[in-house]
Length: 328
Image 1 (tube, rainbow, N blue to C red):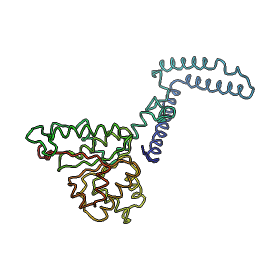
Image 2 (image 1 turned 180 degrees about the horizontal axis):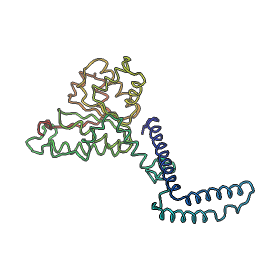
Image 3 (image 1 turned 90 degrees about the vertical axis):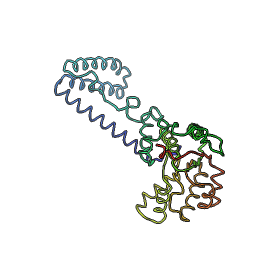
Image 4 (image 1 turned 60 degrees about the vertical axis):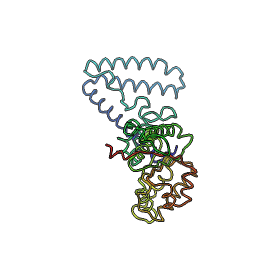
């Protein structure tokens, strides 16, 4: 799994801020309590003085018995404080620090393992940077509606011998297995078929599931992908931003190139596509390409060697049927 260091740094900074806010909130509550009940302040000072004196004797005087009974004394004082809090209208836990996550105490880690809350924070950040936030809200495995696809025998595809419904159920099963085995296989997929049959939807389902498991996913239409690379190549725009965008294209766990063939074709787009496919394949990073193009059109637009890489290294998901937007 490839997670950029700046993602981790940004999340750790968020946890630092959470802990600061928790301590600040506790300080505010403590001041309110001290104003209303000075006896509690005196108890806190007593605990602090006693703990310091005993620790000092234990270290400097080498008195091993100096700390004996301290825990019991502090527990008794804590009970006194809870009683005073209740008498003054405060809940018993009012002077306890309140973390957003009590499991990891807002550190993000339990031992040396990432806490569940850390993984959720990472997924949110990955989603924001995936270019898919709005898309995934509506297009995911939970919202996929296979009933939109015809199961009428009259609509069977002649080459596959199955209905659009049977076809999409097969593709959906393959997509779920792809997610389940992603860490072992890091496979590539070419999703092809006519306009409006759900190619982008299937890509979104896969992307959403992988982001939920903290994988880095980047979505681009073919047009936006090549535009990003052109800016980097020809020096248009912020160089630092362009460099990071290019690095993300080559280094993310999964790159989705949607609607290949819709972009304005140039020699640059053809060579860029081959470079992306080749470099990501060599690095063991997964790519999903969706397109309306036929195999002959892929060869014509992007060269025989690009087509060869796809046929050799990509699983082919063919989706059949009519434009769902027209049916709706």
